[in-house]
Image (cartoon, rainbow, N blue to C red):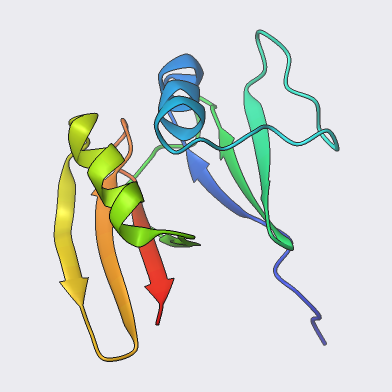
Amino acid sequence: MFKDIAFVVYAVTDIKKARAFYEGVLGLVPNTDFPAQEHSMWIEYNIGSSTLSIGCSPDWKPSSDGAVAGLEAVDFDVVIKKLKAAGVPFKLEPQDFPTCKMAVVFDPDKNCVLIHHKK
């Protein structure tokens, strides 16, 4: 019935602050399929074959209790070091499991973002 996940989207309250986090801290680049404008209220980032989006609307509120996007890190330790240096708050400090490493951080609206690395 389904062949892929089209996208994961987070509600944000301040698009500029959210872009500073997703682009400045996480290093994501807005995709060209949905070009970001200076006053865009919706931004899409391609990650592998998937898309992570952020959107801002007064009728749509962020929540740390909502869905969580898991971002597969190329170098988990480098990403964690960058997040800590940027003062990003952690919900779950880095964990080392037999099959993976993971941590959960908060974006500026307290949405949870899972940082993951398969071993």
